[in-house]
Length: 400
Image 1 (cartoon, rainbow, N blue to C red):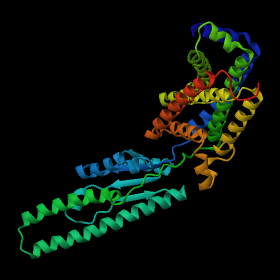
Image 2: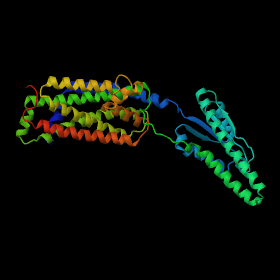
Image 3: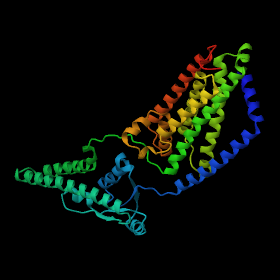
Image 4: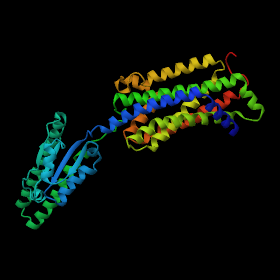
């Protein structure tokens, strides 16, 4: 297998036109990807900017702030900035904060004593949609807390009328107030959250960039299958068999060599622009690219084993890739497709490749990404095994 690897390397270096064309495409793609990555980096954070001036500085007020920081349901939508009142007001008036929350001195103590001590809230109207969302959210919390507070006051009066000792009443009052804070903060837990694994949202430039990369990967894999078919038809494969090179070794070398070259090129497309804009390189993305390349190459090699005639192989391969491109969202973005078309689209590898790359690019490293990688690797192994079986036949179905 090592001798085959040396032979392929020599053939690759001898083809000057192919190398020049590859370098030219690489430069064009890197430049376009660089500007796209630069524009994405310059875009602002769309989360609600939440400023908190904690003048009370009590245990309970800190609980309130920590809750919003640590709660996953809020962390995805809210970015909290702490500071003193003057600093945050300046940021608010300069449009750098969407919401300013001022917790007054004695807030926690007054809450335990069931005294009305309002929190001062300033909502920016620069973004009307955000302002309406924030107002409705705060109104819902206000109504809920007010309802619980009324019941606590009623309980307090009931304990007094029952002749309970003041120490016991105060003790119970503190316990109830403590529960009130946690119950109010845990309001989101009252609802049954249903996780919806929808297709990641992105700009059209990013989406079509990944979609075109997937289509390009399919056709590069088809080209690898074409080169192997040419060797098969020219009799090179039979001559290699006579010197003791087996079918599994031959196909494994072709797959690994081709996949390695393609992986290096696609990694360059991804890594060089990321390094130029000082953006981190994702190891998960690299692992996914490797699995996708192996799958595409092995699938193309499998097709080359099905057809002996080059015309039939290229016709079938181009038809399948064209079908994958259309159904997999290469022309119409997945998010613009009706539901029944999305179901058909999910049957293509292009759909899952684009979805995985968008998810990784957005930092959504869910378990399903590793499932996609696993399925691609298993699929590559299955197609490799089937290719061995097809290439071992003395006569391949089709016209010679």
